[in-house]
Image 1 (cartoon, rainbow, N blue to C red):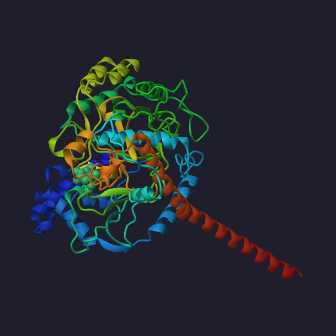
Image 2 (tube, protein in one colour):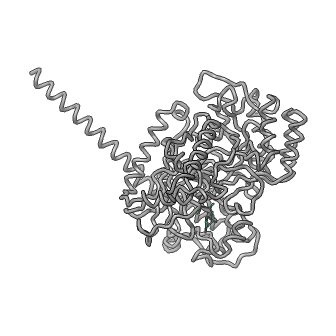
Image 3 (spheres, rainbow, N blue to C red):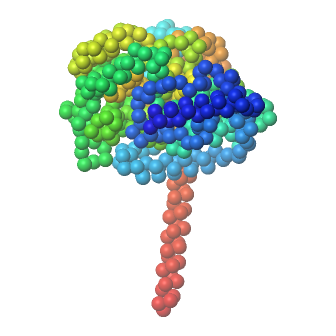
Length: 553
Ligand SMILES: C[S@@+](CC[C@H](N)C(=O)[O-])C[C@H]1O[C@@H](n2cnc3c(N)ncnc32)[C@H](O)[C@@H]1O
């Protein structure tokens, strides 16, 4: 289906070029294409089980046009809309509950309630956040601190609550795009809430005008060896990892099944983690909680079942299943020109839940893309290279993989990517990136997954840590994350001196505040509305009974 789409795209592209020869219409002029916006020959590495990315007609028209035409299209169609944030949160809660209820694979396994809140997990996760916050401030846990007296009392609580992360947009917003994905299965509107902007003076940066793709791809003309490795994997069943597990149930119990090839590899990978006593486990429905503190990304990865398996990936060993269901309504918004666009959701996302994938082109480092791309391999990673023997790949494939894993590979979403490329950096990030391998072990078989670190309350910008080097090189003194731990924050003189325990208290206090607000305003409102509807229904049926009784009399 994808190849068909590509050929259709390509045909239309040439048709557009031919048409432009005779046309005097300036906007059709395809010399406005930059190289990157020309359709590229792409090899799709993954097919989603139920293709969530099924572009509709508008998408083709949009992607076939130059970036100037895209910009003009957005400027022509943007409009002011009125939104009721509180109502949206309540309606989104109902909608997600209904989606879960109607889905046989989710019904028994997923709930949208805080999992970490009030749990002992919260303090352990906050412990991880504290260490990371201290590292991002450039100080070690053991560093001698100048003592500042800090305890949570009424006064410090008030100053801390300035930093609670839930964002409330203005009632009137500028809707720039009704759907970034052009796909009705995942509708992601794009707004501008910048106070100085109105429909006549909107700025549309090139970075918004990318092609949406929710699958990773390799460009064979740019990365021949990697593309050949994918072909090698596909040409011999020894080079693909899949399982034969099946069951009568909607969800096959692959996780912890010693006969499941994918689970066995997943388990082997978990042995690579540093903190052996409590490992981060990559299952489908159990929360994926971080257990280690430093060097997490390089060591925490897993292996998931896929549509090639007998279970088709509908099993307990697939950390991508919830993401593929597109469960959480997302929106892209901008309220600060310096930070640009960010992402948020209108529902509560429980801690440990996979939220979205980070997709794009799998390639080696390109200078101009460094702002957006994310590294996915570490040269000579011995742990991964050892796995090639454990899974009995063919010798030529093993050789190719060893060569490929000696290089740094990236996922670059700059020109073709998905919503994850709009997520900003925060010094107190609420998502964590993990690598999940599927089907095989080449860099092209890695999928990047963003998981909620702790409960994320509706409206909160979804953020991840761009990494120490990036932040120090790029942001230095202008990180705009506005979290209390940020060394550029206005109260940095207090919060960069806290001990780990004091930090932990702050995180717990912020979580408590957000939980109370959610419980009262969203969940409480849902309860009230449901109770009222039930009472009205009961009163109606009592009335009907009374009327019936009168007739009988
Ligand atoms: C991957 S993009 C994120 C999406 C971006 N905001 C946009 O509108 O396309 C990274 C860029 O976003 C901005 N950004 C992200 N996090 C930031 C932060 N904490 N402080 C300042 N700028 C940030 C920087 O311009 C950075 O180069």
